[in-house]
Amino acid sequence: MVASVAAHAQAYPSQPTRWLVPYPPGGGSDFLARTIGNAMAEQTKQQVIIENKAGANTAIAASETARSAPNGYTILNADNGTMVFNSALYSKLSYNPVKDLTPVALLGRFPMILVVGPASDAKDVKAFLAKAKARPGAVNYGSAGAGSPHHLAMELLEVTAGVHMNHIGYRGAAPALTDLVGGQIEAMMVDMAAGGGFIKSGKIRPLAVANATRLPQLPDVPTFAELGMKNVEAAALVGVVAPAGLPPAVLTTLNKNLVDAMNLPAVKQRLIEFGVEPVGSTPQQYVELLRTETVRWYQLIKDQKISLD
Image: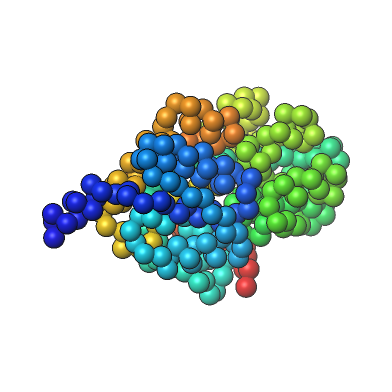
């Protein structure tokens, strides 16, 4: 038995890998998968096929992954929506993130940034929150979708600052950004990958970053912690998971192949330029992160009575 497991690990991968992305082409998660997938295919000499399967807040792709054979040839790009938020937001879910999926590696973080559009006269966070506090429910903010990291980052800010704003969920960050520029909404939380072009062109203004440190792309924009709100830290956490029951030797090899591909200097540079903070964790580090994130966000979702049923 030991010999057969070792032989399987030595031979893995010996066929193409399906890498499911639960979002449409062109977004940050898709870019991450394609960039690392191409490098991994070159290194392993085995094809990596990216399949976009969007829908149901990532549950369609997650369910398909959970039902797949645990052999390392079907993997999923999973964010904190897939692995943390969904089971708190839905009373019934077509997969169980803990029982049905094996965390392989956290690939990257997409730290959230509070931005306002040209219609807002708020020059800083203090002014923005003062307006929201003076007129509860009058400030409209957008997100990449109800239950997305962008949405829950804003809920976290509301709770911490003691303000109430009106949430408008969109089908992705791109249409929300379009309405932000057009003045239909006043603010949103966005990651650098999605909003960087709008920030650089001056179409939207960054007020603060929900990160432990300032972002290298925005050195003049303070963190929420610097402004006295230490708890306002949020990011889209994108990793790779596989079906439950993945053999340990395959898990080890798959993790190594992903991390090695991501750490190639040219690949890492592309990710950073796109707005990703590369990580490349071990499986156990990813499991521990998901555990702490689940405790943290479940409490917020419960306190705010957020449900997507």
